[in-house]
Structures are given as C-alpha cells and as structure tokens.
Image (cartoon, rainbow, N blue to C red; front, side):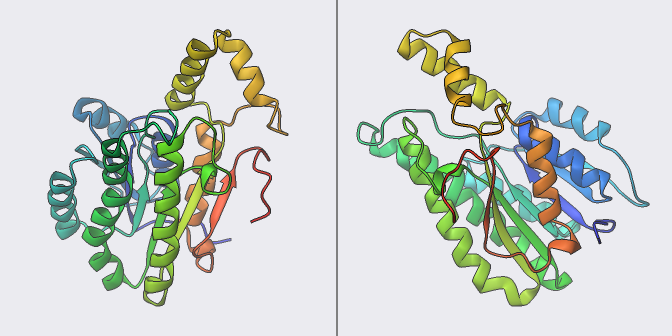
Length: 263
C-alpha cells in the first residue's frame, strides 16, 4: 500500500491542539512537510519544531492566523503557496457554541459560516493552483457526524457542517479530473477540548455531574468509549495518501459506530 508522502506539502488548520495537532504529526510521520495553521504563534512554533522528520528534505512551519478573518487568511496562505505549493489541505477549525437552532441570532449563523464554509473556500482558492500544477491534491474537511444525523443542542453547528459537506461534495466533482480529491471526515465523540466543553455545558444546564453526562453520551456509542484524536488523524492521513487516490466525494464517520445512518 502506497502511503509515502515524501515531497508533499500539507497545510493543516486548527493544528495547535486536538485532531489538527494529531493530524500534523501523522502526516509528518508519513514524510510530508507540514505547515500548521492556528491563532497562537508561540504554541504553533513549538509544536512545529517537535514534528517528526521521516523523509529527506522535510521542513515544517507554521502560520498564526484566525480562520474567521478570511481576508487575512487569504493573504497569508497565498503568500505561503507562492513559495511552497500546497498539495494537501486539511480544513479543521473549532465548532460553533452549542444552542438551539431556532433561538440562535442570524449573526451566529453568519459568523459560523464565515469560519467554516467561507474559510474553506478561501483556502481552496489559495492552494488550488499549486495542486493543479502538480496534477495531485488532497482536500480533507474535518466536520461532524451531524451531517448524517443532526445533534440535539448544536443547531448552528449542525447547519454549518451540513453546508460544508454540500460544498465539499460539489467541489469534489468539479476538480477530480485534475487529480485532486475532496473528502470529509466526521468525528464522533473524540477526547478533545471541544468535547470537554460540551460535557461541562450540558452538566451546568442539566444539573447533572460531568461524569453522568459523559456516561449518558457513551450509552449511544457501541464501542463504549470516546475516540482519541490520533484515531481520527489516522483516517485523515490515509485519505491524503496515494493509496486513497480513488476515494472522492465521501463523508466517513469515525465515531465508534454511534451514527446509525447507512449512508
């Protein structure tokens, strides 16, 4: 199985923690040069310096930028791509706050769409010329199982994630002939800061203990446990390899079997 990413350059968003951080490590271990993108410059620089070097010529770097600021994002990524073309784009950013869909302010939806959908479009347009020139590219969007089954209490997130999935499916058919694939990873309950925050929020609203809330969530997971960021990152990384060249336009749940939908 061809998993070697030597000579490829990956841009991993949300790479300072959780799934993004784990993905950066996994791609670097497969030989890719990795540029990590998040808001904290000092934290990113330290993490980038610790990434593995598994192939000759690998160089790792970082960009400190807020994905919600699409103008700034576009400027930084176009500058990167002009000197170091990007072959792999991992779209990953923090989810919108919890809450009911019908009580959310219109501005909440606009902010979430800017941080997720518009940021994804901005990034794609910035890196696409380099992928086309190489005749090879991978775009992987880390979104949510809510695109298959909406999650109660995450109204804005459910809506925004579905929009990203629809965008990705459309784009996957438009650029496949250029040797570029576009796929989605749908993490289930994964042990990240996002999950910890959701558990705390539910506990405060319900009056239950955090342990009780966690056990209630796990009751719906056949695997009986929360996932680890590294388990999600492994599937993201596979989709970025030559071995996954014929996988395009799909949404893959990595959730311990929690999603009941067949497709």
